Image 1: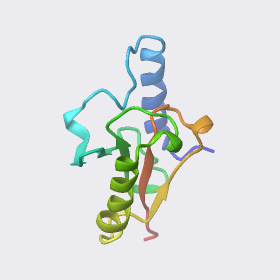
Image 2: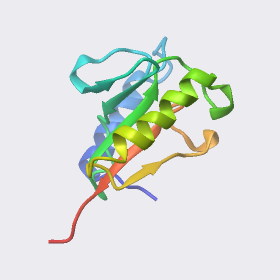
Image 3: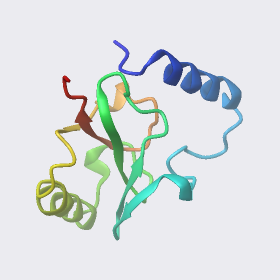
Length: 123
């Protein structure tokens, strides 16, 4: 099932084809100042450059600064800050409707991350 519009999916596929086997680093480990939203001690919230724009009005990512693949690899400090962000920062606002986490074998990027979504509203 695809949640990207045709245009975004084409852009995403071109990106993957252009850089297949050429990227020395993880996409999320490379700093991109254009998509930064919030920065914390162990985590950052970034605008997703290939959003699920077919279903979401807003699609950001919460990503650990340190590269790891699975939740079980998180340090206690990282876990505590993630809980704080989810319970005190994200839950207070009405910016997002949903936090989405894929299983590690389903991720297109192996760096652990969570999707922050605000769904499109019917008009």
